[in-house]
Length: 246
Image (cartoon, rainbow, N blue to C red; front, side, top):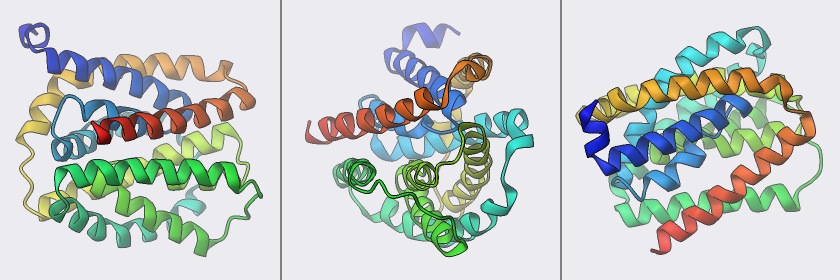
């Protein structure tokens, strides 16, 4: 406990993780989208990717039990197949792209998806093929940046899913692919000691945020939910670009 108050970086990481977990518990995504650009100011970019994998596995494993009744399991199958294909590609990016390149890559990814949400307003029809492609993109981003959410969120919001189904399905998907991400890093020989050490201090505060967000979720309207999604993507795009430039 004393380490928390004596380590400024750890204090910042706990605050960032708390806010990110609260947002994820309200929307079903956003933990990595919000925390990645902020944690890049605290830790090395490649350590951030693995740390977020660990935190996400723990939190999503607990969270999925809160939303299991609203999960669309039929939708998840092609999504996960695509994700499995994308994971090795993301690992290659993670291993061979320098830290500064990884920051710029993260910034470009978020900005690109945000731009697409503004220029492409046509409602999409869900198909297995489209879902598989989205899963592949998400898998690539998961193991290269820990930010697997943007392709899936844009896809689901473009199909006008209600907030309850979107939230539950996203949580189930992230739970599974984060386990796959940990496995991929293990097979690639990544050292997990830093991520495990930091997670021990951060996770208890995330559980508090998870409980709080779940209590507040019923009071958020669909319109407010959609606005929150957009603001999160905008914030992440702008802040990540700022972080990459500096």
